[in-house]
Amino acid sequence: MTAVGDLVSGLDAELVRLGYKPSTLKWYRGCWRRLGRGFASCSAQEFSLDIAMAWVDEACGGFFEKQQAGTLKPADVYLFRVAAMLDDFAAQGAVLRRYARSLSKLSAEQADVLAGFQAWLRAEGCAVLTVRAYGPVAGEFLAFTASRGGLAVLDGGVIGAFVQTLAGYAP
Image 1 (spheres, rainbow, N blue to C red):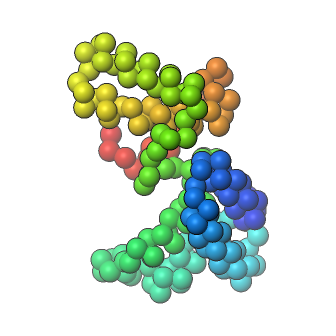
Image 2: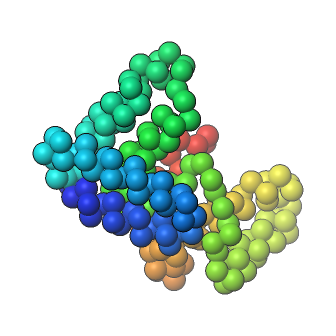
Image 3: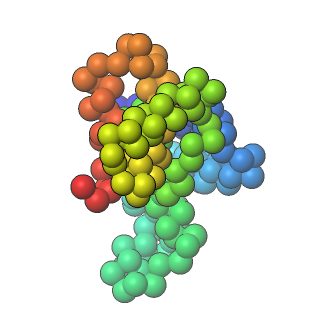
């Protein structure tokens, strides 16, 4: 298990590294403070998804009831995302970018690798839509591997960890 404060610090550093906007970071930090108070009220030092989800449920005035009734507001979903993101980071050491995928954070070298991959797909006769669909995932893979030593040290563990970040997407 990981101490809540350590987990929040690590996730904050990762969001900064990923280029999250200052206004977004400010919002996450405020939520993390509220969540931290929720953990403190339970005398919990270590992160637990159960405690985090109990906090979400309380902070939203009945998240799970609203979910069942189909009356969730965007603010409710955002608080759920805060807890889920902490859990993902605790388990994977990565932010699972389910909502906003972006290739803008690739280095010039990574962008060249991605362009080469897309050129190879086209040369192999892949459809335009296939190339377009594979590009963002390949870019996410490059960004993910960069945080783990790059392609030069790629192994099955890194590939497996990346595949786990895709949980929830269609096959």
